[in-house]
Image: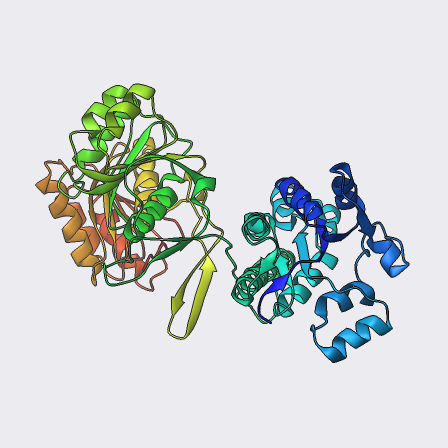
Length: 510
């Protein structure tokens, strides 16, 4: 028979929140309850009679609670099919059938996130609980499994609306959720150990428990889903739902602003993941105006991000522009009221500028993974290659330009001065084209390039880019170096009184 009535239950949970109504309903429905330790005491405090697991197994909880439920008299009652042969064995060995298993695992991921104490982390690896979940899920034909707090609501609905009767489809749906919980849990444990010492043969394992359907993917005919916890990073305080493309742009914006999070007020404007305007200034309003000046045309419909609180004066200026998303650590209330009046524009209050240590994407018939490019060059890491040393002002411009170039699609060139992006060329098949594009954009938006700095994401195989930039007004250059013909560019700089520094670090971004 597909429908099954819950007559007995094993409950062993870490979190008791949300369990009270379930226990009371089980008591009212005369369900026999088996339990251990703290869960047993919790049930008894609600007036429930509990059959102690240690009385069933004739063994107490041992090894500091590491072994409580691992016994044939527990797992036999869970795994037995409700058919003649299995039921006969249950009777022979005096094993009660268990119809419902409610488990909430030890909080392993939360423990890893909160401490480096390995002993505490290891103790939060659940053994009995995960085995109970898998056993009950395997036998979904006869057993209901509730594998986490998230499914307490499902059980409440079963008990209240169906008087404890479940259909095969309901039990199978809960079994699917149970294996999702168990696989996520095992993946988290593996990844913890893998951070301590990676396998000789690399293994790719990712499991994200939360998924949110999006309106669509990059285009309306593509389905899109975001796997992650937006609430952990952002408080969404206005606007329409985030789209697939919004999220890709937001990720690029956060990665960029992480470079400037501790600097003076900095604003950036991004379009299709590429920053087209960036400026650091004494005030948020000045930073916004100078970032927008970098490319006011591309800024239309763009993603805006700031490392400082948005005040009313800045909000009034921003409000003149159509944008998709505005991200900031905070908003003055009057600024929030003004910006929030445009109902389709998305406002995100960022809680922290988190950048993942690893990045990956699907490719061919598999996945490629790499360390995220978190390298940020400083004055101390630069090596001057030319006779002329950079001035302090030029060093500041070079560092700023190099931060910008790192977040643009390759091939890319950045022109900058006084903590402002003047022009950029990105996504070009030729570095010369990228250089020409950066110069053309800067001139088109009215910038004087005399004395500005230039950054390149990779080395110059020939001196042509340096010559083009020099003729446009560039006087300081930053690049990784590493070409067998580096000397050609260095010689050109020496002959024309330019300064050039090497970082030794390439920042390709495909």
